[in-house]
Length: 393
Image 1 (spheres, rainbow, N blue to C red):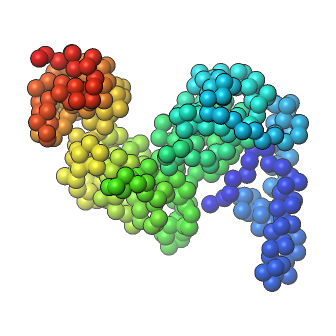
Image 2: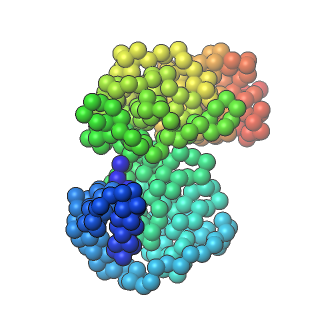
Image 3: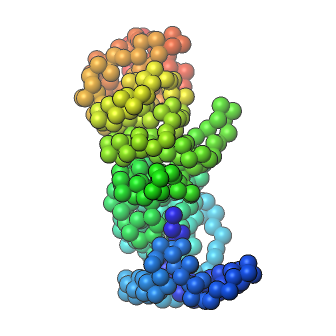
């Protein structure tokens, strides 16, 4: 996979990097000349040759200077910034609100804020992805926001987070300006050619094809490697991501590669669980035809695949998703006796709007889960008294 060439790449730094590369090659016994080191460096960044990379850097620099005159100044100084810094809080709020002018004003005064994490563990570029704001992607990248930085406590960078948040406009801008998608992000975005390019002519996964992956945890609560360490796990993780977003052709292709249909992706759910969550019957059919086990329980909600989609959406309070899944499969409203249900998970999460919608549709308030608890009792257990008050006593 190509390395990240910053939007504000410095040509002098690249020249120095080529000289450093040459010195290392000569120390290793090579009789290479500078043009060979320059060619290798250019190819590392995805360019055919040194001249093509130089032309790209100069063109982008001219465009940036025209759009952002402040960038003609010297490199931005480093700065230590506290998570509760007033300007940082204002910047994050402006990103959430899509206030591009305010973001530019703040960064013009304090450019170092472009890479500072907020209290929630997200940097400004992550928030821009979450809001599907391509304009802010351009501004933040111009101020040297790092597209490869991970959300704290997560396996996501800005691009894979955009795929998770269904932010195609932001994702396209990031790919065009900053960084090629890895296997995981390409699968989540439904980019079949990019997914196929992660495999060699023999169908083997290329080294370092995935740099991101699902956030996963061991039974003791420790984080598992991200991306997973083995190729079959990386492919299976990508399969689960493609299934989650309903990308049929990517799912179809990945099923021709070595995969583990019981692989535990985010929330300890299998690709089939995520296919059901997507609400895409074609991906569900592909996985079932491939032999996916419908009876396996996820590791978080303890649901079989058929219940996972509606219960996961309800547990997050995602009302639009809950409605869409129920409109497609009304029988899910009363499913889960002796296991769990959408109403149980919405009540336990304290999601009042979802609970009201489910009750209005006719969900059973007296259904009991695997522990014998009703939805009202689940709400009380979690301290959601306002939600519990909706249920008849």
